[in-house]
Amino acid sequence: MEFFLVFMLGMALAVVILFVARPGLFAKPNQDFTYFEVMLEEAIVELEQKQQELLEEIEEQRTALLELHGQLLAAYTPKQNQSPKVLAVLELAKDGQDAAAIGKRLGLGTGEVELILELEKDWKPLAEND
Figure 1 (spheres, rainbow, N blue to C red):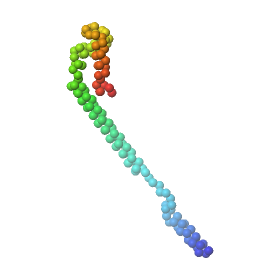
Figure 2 (cartoon, helix red, strand yellow):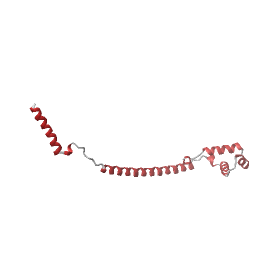
Figure 3 (cartoon, rainbow, N blue to C red):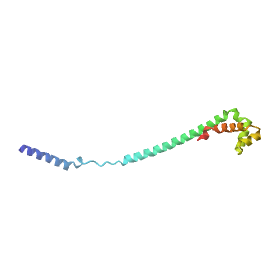
Figure 4 (cartoon, one colour):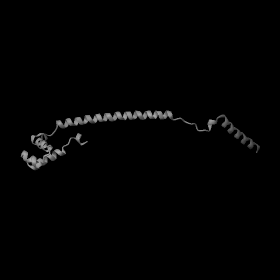
């Protein structure tokens, strides 16, 4: 029993000495994350700048593609859309005349004028569909 008592006193003394000699041993250290916060903010700013650069590059590429599309359409426009009859019908339709008036003026049937107008309405370049 005496040995047990001496043993317990020795253990208690060892714990007290540890608390006195190394008080931070049993306490959770206060970590400062400000350095990491600054690094994270800088990384976010860099990512936002890179994102803006990429968006600008995408917009430039899109513009270039739309210009190329327009050039291709101009180069490969079907011949029937370039005929004088179709151009005259489209010009009069642009002025606001209806199909019957256009047909009388050009000597065409109303159905033919309506067909030309309907085909032209469906023929839109991709750049205009945005």
